[in-house]
Length: 363
Image 1 (cartoon, helix red, strand yellow):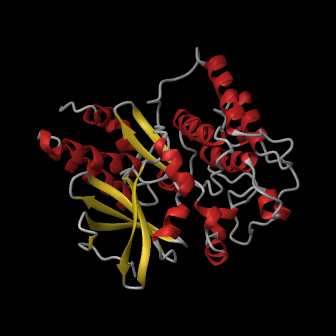
Image 2 (cartoon, one colour):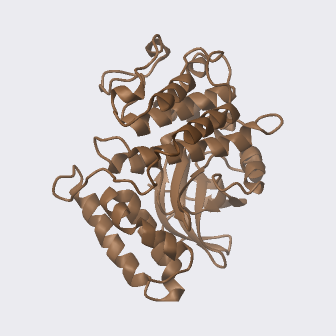
């Protein structure tokens, strides 16, 4: 049962709309600020005081002040009374499109289309560059599909990283509870408790990249009997192109360098990774397809989740109704943003319209 019910008022400025999701250490709710509109609120399950909440947010708040387009903005932190006692929370920008888990899921058993996957990888890297360039470097420490949010603005798709540094201060019980999801993206040296570095963040990003490009984990065979452990990491993974013929040799090399088992042989930080991606882009720009390349086919009748596909088209219809008046145009964009992340077919048809709405253009 959620700690907060729909309709709950929080500190005179927020009203809880609905639960978006939850993990081992927090719930995330959509809330409406009485002046600023929709926001997301992360409510900690064990953090009880404002001092503890602020301590959790030190690094995330610093990065937020830099105003990078691929890092989630934080707004406020406080405490509130819940059914389980007083708990800390913070508010951040609301991204209607969900996270990378949803993006991967809607493509069913196929990789994410290459242009989209590369765009996501480049944007995550850009966010990590800002963090790794701080003195001392700020490490994410928990980079997973769930912590990369997918949204759309007037330029198209824009991903944002959330939860910078939060896991560093999480208590051992919380870390253990969330380990199953995190281990899939955790560098071998971190699993061996040998310390965390920028290269460990790069490993996590490499794992995300491999998953987007191949729909597979680089070291896991997908069997429910195959558990994540340090014993998996003996041999380098197969090149991503082994599972996706659209991947070029340079992208293979970039991903495999990010997944070097020995951290001393791995791409050391996001700055170097960004240079590698930039070099690849310059070498292939004459052959590059536009971002709106053909996407994976999906239909309500053939999909493993027809209700999800159906819901996406219904939401798209609702968004078009909202877009008929200027006062609800941004609400329309929020609804459409969620729809395009639920269905590749809806994305192919309406993503251009969504970017126009984000610019304030009514169609």
